[in-house]
Length: 335
Length: 263
Image (cartoon, rainbow over all chains, first blue to last red; front, top):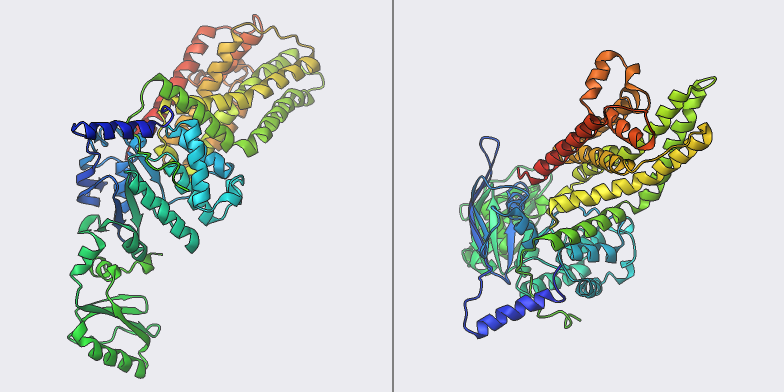
């Protein structure tokens, strides 16, 4: 187990190296052409290339079954890529899965097996398993419990916790002594809005400490506010990558016109100026030019008047619209 | 609030070597003990009751129980106590993790496979030992035996528990479908109690079944445990040790293969 404050030691070493003008190890994460084929032809990941710098919070967005979890399982060494390379700084994570497990922390989407663990116990023990010094782990566990407002459950057993608190305990377990890469698969599931905000603070803090944080989610709205960069994955392929602003840039000058159709109504004929549309359940989501706003309102109001629609909403485009355009899904239909 | 830890940086070192293994062993032993804390006490009690039940219950089948029958049951029950948790409960717990999908988290924990397996072995051994002791005490009191344990009982007990645990560990990890694991363990309980020469001598089995059993470890576990508890009761001890050890290695190898497999 690391010496007391081994983090500080490694940090101090890297700072000293920087001051001495020496080259410092670049701990960037790089996936190059990662392809995972199941059976003979099912391409769960198809030539995915991406890189994440230390300190970045990187979103992996995509519909269910897009291949996000397959990708992160290859990072942590639970699956082996059929082709491609995954490196973290100087370490080849595919060739050395033991190193991958030490250098990466993984919060899976599934519940943690902590029914008979008290909250503090679960966090501290995983911190020790992750190589943390006893005193430092204890201090950090207390800080996490306080920061995520879990104090009243600190000595409660896992089986008596709500789903949201269990999720926060899981987050604390994998980040009490985090790896260089922290992979969080839907970390905010079941978490109440107040603690969700606290959780985001902690995720940002991991970035500040130099962790490369992978955030796997289909909640686009949340990701838009929280990630530095993101990739959209669909059908195993990386179909877009960039900052939330850069991805939205292509939609500048456009508006989102969402029409809620009456149940079972067929999609009405679309005016020629509708740039794109997607139907999700009763919702018809269209993108139109700002110049066509008045026409759009008239068209939607007409649908309501003739009993085909119940209501409509017109607003600025968001990352969600980019996501819809690229994947043909809304993030809501994945819930 | 965060001031105390700001400046921390994630570790850049990959741990290796003996201290890492030792720390992982202790941490995983704690992990398993805490994971079973609601059951461990009950498990030990159930094991004791099962052991006592066999030792005492067998006498009810007879008007006057033959000494051989009493002796075989009394010296076979410790084997049941030693393998029950590792062989039956162990794979069922792994199967449950697979069903509840927490298996990925457990597999992603940064611990070397060997100390993790050793930690589980320790817990299975601890869960079996009290029942072994109580069963033997009850057998002595009920049938008036005076067992004369030799030092050989130590390797016999350790190896029996090891092989039982490793076969179970292999079953749990190597069989992909948890339902199959559950079914196989149910079948094992049935086979062990009814059709392996643990609680009765092998010569009482039909010849073909005795031959089949010779290739499996369970009857041999009883041989080596008996050899450690009594004098002159069993023969062929060396080959029994060998067969039990080989099965232990097979179980460990299957587990190592399954845990190292990356789909």
